[in-house]
Structures are given as C-alpha cells and as structure tokens.
Length: 157
Image (cartoon, rainbow, N blue to C red; front, side, top):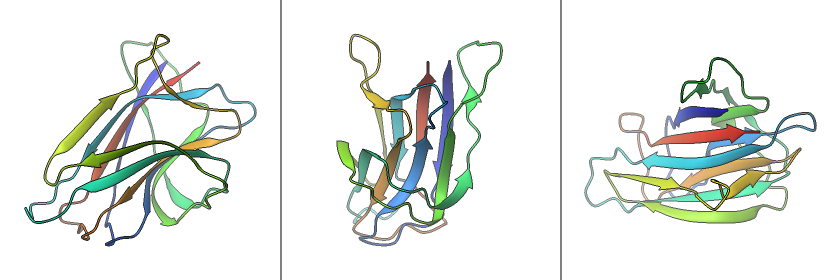
C-alpha cells in the first residue's frame, strides 16, 4: 500500500535543526519505505540561503510532535499505516546514533521532488523498530507566514 503525508513546519529557527517528519515503526509493524520526498521552501526573500534537508535513520527516542494522518493513494480500497508518523515537533527526538541516508538542498522560494528508485522501487527502508526522519536546517529563519512544507510518499509491505 502507498500513502501520502505532509507536514508544514510552523517556524524554522536560523541554524537550528528541526524535525519535519518522523516515520516510526514498531516490532509488529510492516516495513515502512519512503519512495518519494518533496520539500518546498516558500520563503519570498531572495537573499535567503537554501534549506538543507537531512534524511536519517536512527533508533533514538521519539519527541513530542503532532501525529499526522497519511492518505491512502493509487486506488487501494482500504488500509492504514501500521507505524506512526509525526511532524511539527515541539520537543525534538533524541539522535540515537543516526545514519545519514541522504542530504538535499531546497532552493529558496522553490521545491525539490526526489524519487528513490532502485530495482525494487525504493532505496530508503525503515528497519523494524526504528525510524526515518527528515530534518531541516536553514541559515535564515523561516516564519509562520511562509513555512517550509515536506511531503512523503510511503510504501508499507
């Protein structure tokens, strides 16, 4: 099953890591794979530097965030994500020996859209009882008026 979920960051403080989305799996959950990521920097200040996105896998403790509800995609009749997905953290998760999977730069006032396709259709895979997170860093703050947006396409099997 393929799901789509997005998280809007309320504010992004300059030079401070902010978890945009974290996909948590559990011992009993199916494997969660991220197949596509879209990041939008909606800043209107042309002199702002790009937002850096860190895609990581780790086993650190979860923080306090808003539970996000993924939408089932591509004509499947029914289903629900077995893990949990959170965004807009007020208390950041702990690192827990992160493994950096990818680093992306999102140009100011623009979007990037990355698909992860290997022969099996995905490249990022959350191991059982771990998580994958998208963390954002920007040299300049982004206000609540023009917050960054992160969107994921997730496959579970």
